[in-house]
Length: 279
Image (tube, rainbow, N blue to C red; front, side, top):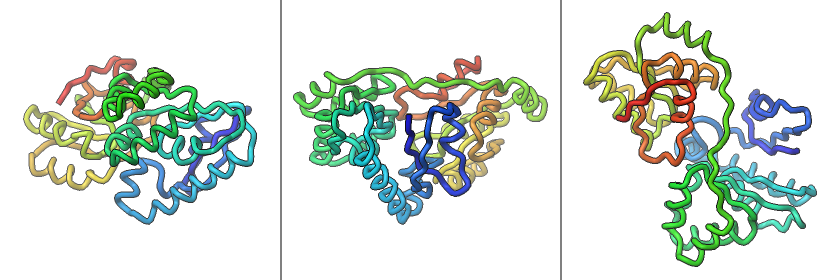
């Protein structure tokens, strides 16, 4: 198996995730555009990063043309399926596409003609288009003409993304001893996550709110917390083990996102027996 991944300088992304010796992780640059809090947020914050993303896409595109594969799995319809993989013949290689949420939201927001062209190209080439939740599939289908929606449905499959939980009990105990009672908000600090509502909840109810994550909204959210008098501690983007330890130690996860198809953090909270409060 070969995994093509972007990586920033000094990053071990990809190599740490794919620990199996049978997996060949190939870094093709592009790290400036990818990483927390997401490619779209990073490019919006600094538009020249799109050059890095385009260069990475071109390298993967060329690699797929050169190599011979039985199957290509493109995570994210845009850009991995289109424009990278779907327009390529790739011989008899099977193309599977996996949509996690942000790519579906991007597709739905694109101009009608562009959206139809992209979806038509993917539907003509892919054998399976997997969505991590039914609402994501429904949202995309509703934005398409009936004939194209039926073509997507014919290859669609709904299956939540799998995840493994590390053992974070010891670290969670340390955090609980250090912080006492607290609630946690965990995710990218972007407008659609509505972390301001979690802050408002903390301001009205009292108690500590730990905000785990980073993104373009961080400065405004910190100002909002100060203005509301909320006891909010921003700890930034953390390694997954540490973020999950905060989630395991918290009294509750405060969740206010308006655009989740199948939220991973909700599934992680359930697995860790952490209650969820909707804000």
